[in-house]
Image (tube, rainbow over all chains, first blue to last red; front, side):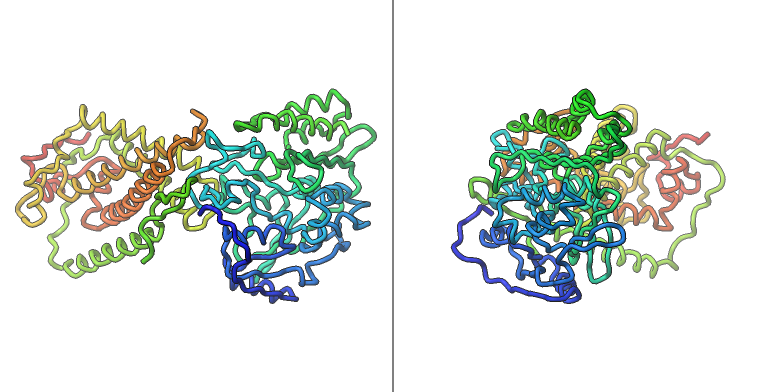
Length: 331
Length: 255
């Protein structure tokens, strides 16, 4: 379908459950016809352009149990419909998990952060404009990738892990949560399952239509940050064309446990280079037990981009990613 | 029933073929199940009229050389891998299927080329030719086949056509993805690409039907000795005499 501009929203049912059971029952009964609505920042465009055509929206922001930030025995739990502004400004997050506070504070613009939720930021769909324009590409159920065609504009697209589709994970908070070893709480009528943040995102090799492992009827209801990574040394940087209201060209999130100048343990993830936040396991292993230094940063930065396969217009991402990793390690 | 072919708008807004409608997968599955179940019921009803089973003892003759058996089972394995990795994602299973799919496809391509060459120069190619006379065989109890029966030749040629269609269309699709051998150009016009997807989908559906039918007949009690011969390579002389014309097929004795 080629996009047509519409002046109005389509006729659509709106459900506003106020408790968990009702929300999960609606998600289950409506299945793919029920659009899970958080702040709506990745919703209204899709629906208004008729490029996604669910019959109903289930607004989740009125479920109090899924809002707010609280301490739990293993660390901190963030309700999935907590806004990005609340996360960025929360004293607990700022003091213990500054990496996430920084990542949340740089998403889009203040207005969007005021209504946008962490779950919405994590589960948002690919930002490839061919896909968003309504073209029937692989991700839309078609048989071609327009971004990776000879004339395709792919400056913002993937340099790793492309499998037919070359879109990247657009979330700013996702690499931070991977670096913090967060756990996603996924609820459905049949119960709850816990998934590592790293495994929450799926690439096109495994599922070319969805960007997360959420199945029909499942809702991301909370994110748990483990105390083992609280108060680590953090580094967050996002490079975008604009400082406000833009997606990352490349971002890096790093958490390091230090003992003096020695790196005891590290977790590093890059955003906007792959369809999932790209965790840099090899670099984490190489850093373990090493003295932090400029030379070490140089050395591991070269490792970061091994295996990169840039497209026609995004070769610049290779040195950009290497430099961001270098800065993250150097601190 | 839903649509047979799926269409989409290309980048210029023109309607082009996207591929086969996967509703047909269910149609094929149900049709094959119904037909095979009907066959099983009829055969069960006629069971008391069956002639007694040929003895497996006595002199043994070679039905399939070991290289041909290996070819058969590798082909079976690759086709299974292709069907499972091709169909499971359509049914909603999420796994990294594409690499397994093209590796199995390459394997099928290589062994098919091997089989074509071997059958033309090292095997009795004529024994698989389906001639006008063969069409009378199912209706004439006195007419015995040579090495291969009418049904076996029919299955072979049907599989040949379908596998060649799957391979040719699959290779064209393989060129559209990155592989260790090339970087994709992704430059095939969308209408041609849609046609390739349609033909690949149709031949996949035919392959599913043929594979199910083949397995069913391989497991039929009265045909099990053929399946055994595809594992062990031999048939008893009694089995040959009961099912084949010794003037049309003179097998060599097994070691």
